[in-house]
Length: 420
Image (cartoon, rainbow, N blue to C red; front, side, top):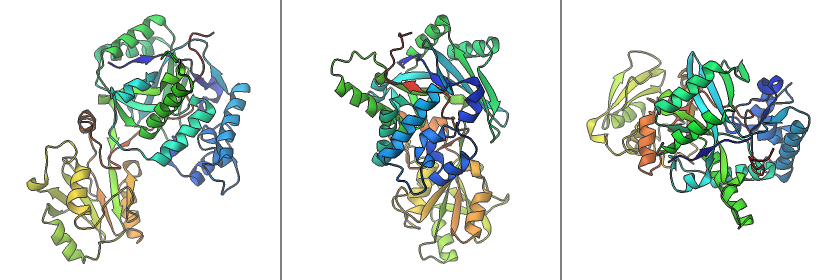
């Protein structure tokens, strides 16, 4: 069962919502974040990446950075940029991109359900990235970045949410500069809150779509608080963390493409011959080459696009080995290009599908990279199959769009939701 509960969100006052809302902290570097907030004193990036408020060169993991984030957060609460709801609510967050919408329910989920694998993951996490968010959450005493979770569609949940959005006006409704629509409703009815809680109790599993590091960090902060409060009851706010739950059939995974710096000493003809052992190599009819189906790959080399089709002997029914990202890694990148661990190998880089295939051409044509591979997107079914098997995907297997914005909802770890 999936245990969820309402919470008293700290959220932007309506006049500030557009300025506060910001892309997740981990989709840009410090200098990009610094540029994004120019002229906007309210951007949540100033809290999420507080080093941008300090002189260039400041260590982003210094105590000063986390204290700056806390002080700015408190200042925005005290000056009314942020408000806190008096009673615990659920919230609906709808994102619209290119005319296509996905509608999520903003809730608190239980750390115990992550620990017992009701909330399922499909990626490894890095200790250094966890440590950063642990300190951020601990210092601010709040979950500031929502975890992006998916669930198998449940018709009763959809009916409740559809009923609410058609009868109640939103509290925020705008299109951000990147063309993404953001519409948010507050569910403040005990009846609907109770029905949603009951519906999710019948949902067997939730799946992390995006935000593995934020999820792991939120759980570890909760466990730290339990150690500090040995008499905890399980009802305290630190036993729960901020999440947005989306039906899996509304989500869109984009391609996550690869670029490599060199051919590992191969000539072009030898490289193509080596590939042909495991892939059928065709000149691409349409360029740039977007793979038309699973187990096909585009390749850009020396100004030419090729279509690669995996041969039957490299295919697998295993939920991980059968992924396209695994087929490319195990039968081309590792044996031919000597890319061992793509997490650490400096010869490979990854390009999210939102940048388009022209970005692959640009990086190869510039001489920065030698060869590029375009991927067929991983499906939600594949992601959930890997998570159900308690396995992990290769790195950079999924790129979700649109990205959830940070700053719309903050979960205070100390406030009792029954307090007025």
